[in-house]
Image (tube, rainbow, N blue to C red; front, side, top):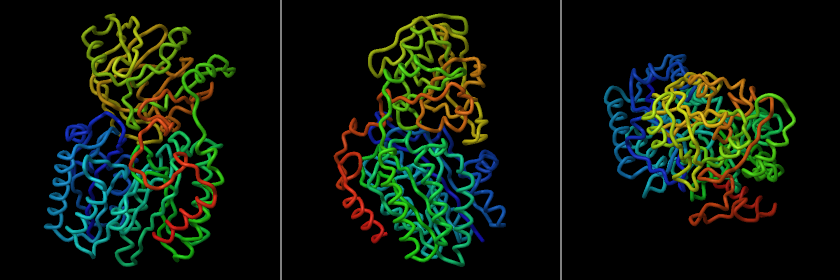
Length: 503
């Protein structure tokens, strides 16, 4: 069996001021063929899982263009045109070597492009035109996918991650590839159903025991088994998009339609029952500082600023709790702060040098303090924890600054400190710190949470990844959705029933 595999991966925050161009994709990765195998074949991500499944099945796998960039704002139209053309050229080259039975498109699902309403749907439709109606098109999607109607209609199979932090990407990529290969002889079609609720990213986490989303993931597996389905997924969605399909949603594959309807109705009822926990607000910086002042547990306390997460479209520049940590003379480590000018200034001063650091100058009143450069150089390390295991992270020119008793990592490239190796690779021992501050929404839980003997303090410092949806100027939505509009149970059920019937 012949398989074509391609990837275009970008999570776009439509309100973020960070423009995304072709350089952003070429900087992270832009490769095809054997180079994809060499770079990602042994990683625990989507590519690794899809490749493993195809190899295990003895499929003739031909890998076209695979590219990705770090989260940010919308992609420029000319950049998307160039990427789409390059991807389709690579797919046509694969077809010239032999018509594929299966096309695997590894997408994120939250792509936004200037001037294009449904870019991932358009890409899937172009792939369909290239390979014809007989090939099976299977699409992997991030847990935070906002699935546009054209993509849902065009793909045969859609499969998302189910866990957040995304520790299941390898397994889900493998599962999608297995189902796609099986669908060549036993066709199936995935249905997509929207739920009228946009849940803040930190409330979507599935790892901690009291997570409402974790309960919903367990229920999805139970319902899939009970109703004889190949798969039932609940997606958190990515609410930083002015689209009606930017919401939580469900994907169901396999089994009788009546069984699918019953399973999705039960999932929707369970979401409604947990709506208050799913929409609970997060503390602000002042409340977080109070929690730190009154903490009673020993050991390292993990502080998480969810509002300025560079992995969710945040700039990564705001000073967050740094002024308070320094004023309180706390022994802390913090990262990443994405500030190219500051990183370059630290590099000029060099290890042992001192200078007046201005942190957060681009986003408001800066935090100004005397900084000593403990280290400077190129930031490059591999994740060692359970998420994105083995994947290379490159932060560009960076530095470790000593301010007070703290160690602060600054970078030129916009990356999230997903993994404790972000600190360990730079010689920062987290076990000796009273507080570790990261800018994240939930990915931190996979690698950092086991070290947080003093507990975890979440806060929303504002910014482009804030959990408060009222901060954002939504104008393009035409349907009522929680929490932007009040919905009673009858209105909720009407929307859900309509979406199930139309899927």
